Length: 120
Image (tube, rainbow, N blue to C red; front, side):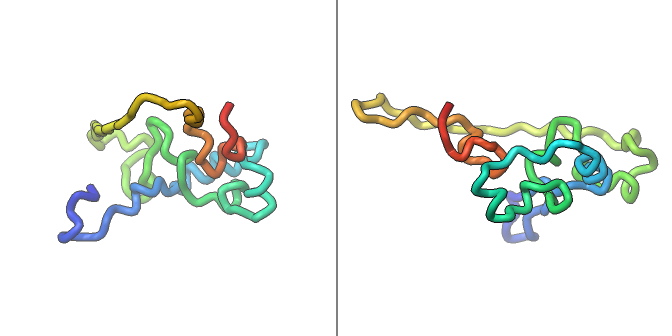
């Protein structure tokens, strides 16, 4: 919970770190993460599984954010009760005027989108 700023530091889990188990899965992939040419040339660590330490590929639905070898009695953490998490988003918008830019896809701004910020 990151709502307790005065009580403690935010959990590092909000950054979606890769667990050792997930890192093994990613390293076994034959294809590289999808990345733009510019980010690959810059040596961005998100563009290579061997240097990828966390992010969207480690936070898919049903992925563990903890080391299950260390914190669970089995690989499925069957003794743990799953958390149910809700999010709330407020979107403000206004009518478009002539010359307004098209809406970008969410992938436009992801380091590993491969779209180099171009809308589709």
